[in-house]
Length: 298
Image (cartoon, rainbow, N blue to C red):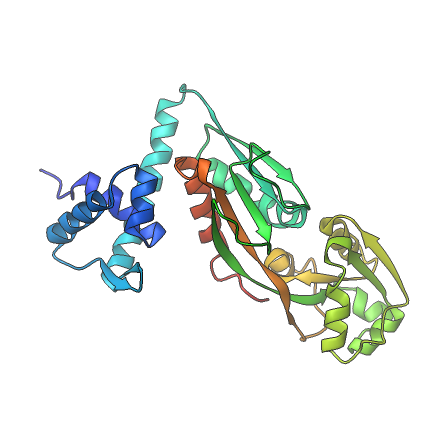
């Protein structure tokens, strides 16, 4: 029996336009004209008998039917792409080069990277953990994960989420030192990340305990070291909610207080213009956005 499949080129153009929320940008990704994207989307809408997009200022937005169809299309294309790579197998391997903030790379990305690698088993991955913002003109990195920073010409920049801060420690630590209120931090050791030096002062001020700087302090050049020290019971670290959500959910860390504050910056994924057309770069960005969906806050 003949399958009731839509025009596959129209599906491909629709998926790109839906991801980018722009016919113009989708056309650049696909190396075709904006008119070609519009034509293929209209063809698909005619085939389906529903509107997939509506105007939203200078961009386009998915209708309810468009969102449902896009979800199904993206899943189907991801499966098709992954199985194609497994079948071809012997073709030349490609390398995805990522630059990321060390805290994000070690605490959030590395524990999850195997899930992405399983989708693309013939893709090699290189991660460079850089505290400083990398100049893509001098680096071979194809995609970056940044904490704040300016919006620069020649870079596609998408916000991944807003972070919130909350003190965290080992489950046994509050009872061991009698930690019940923010002012009790005076008898605790505070664990600091040198990249985020302002975290503790901002949280203490917001909690009305700005004069409670801790019994003593330890400073680490990598956030993962501060978190490992907290897990080992060495003191209280400032938790970045988007990074430590899994540790809190598993009970590896606890928060003795409910007070949270918004972090000074958010996380962004950026792609230089020279890498915009690379399919596996876009796939990593899409996977990253999906993995971080709904992770704002604590």
